[in-house]
Length: 177
Image 1 (cartoon, helix red, strand yellow):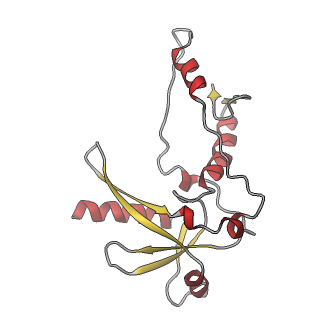
Image 2: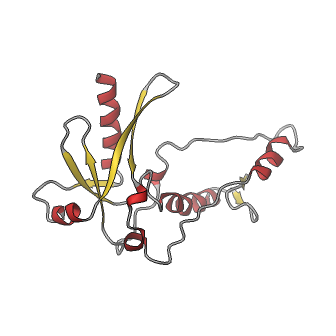
Image 3: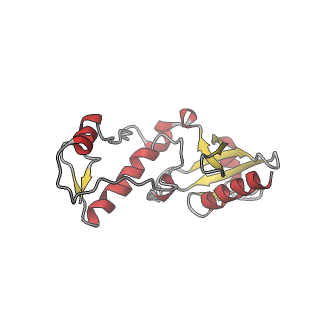
């Protein structure tokens, strides 16, 4: 029980320090949040490393994409094709070259925040510990949101090139250093 509560508190702390701002009942935006929110839910996972992990996930299929992102938003984000992965992993390369991959913890939460002039986004969570409905203003991408992969790509790719990686022309998600 204590480990699960700790996992939940860690996730909420991460969200509240980055992309969510809680709206108490007396907050001026609370009525707008209650009138137009997207539901989210807390998922619990027991990882192979032996720890519990909570993750708040937005129910993106319920988002009003036209209202939130506008009619011309391009949700497509690039993914490396299997052919490029096979060529890199199985192809010839000098013995002093290394192939590496990294998992970026809480990746979407590190994306650039939504623009200042973007329509407000509100999310709701039924607190799994207290059972209370909580409302939040969403300031940036969250897992499950339709636009999150695109915002993450627009944050990550310029950063990778700024530290010396060269982006592929045919495979925009492939970087070499």
